[in-house]
Image 1: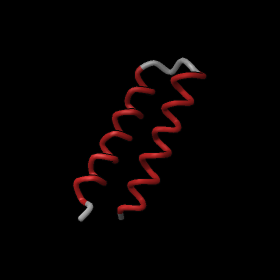
Image 2: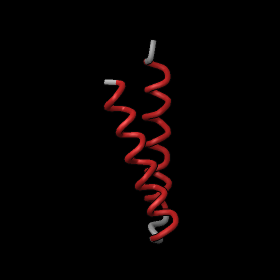
Image 3: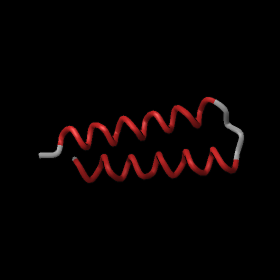
Length: 48
């Protein structure tokens, strides 16, 4: 599960970076950043 969350966070951060610097998607980009941050926090909190 931890590897899945890491991959998800990296993909969402990548999508956010591409959208932020390349396209004007407005609020959608910030939602991607929020989701990536939440996935990373969940990963950190669930690791032992």
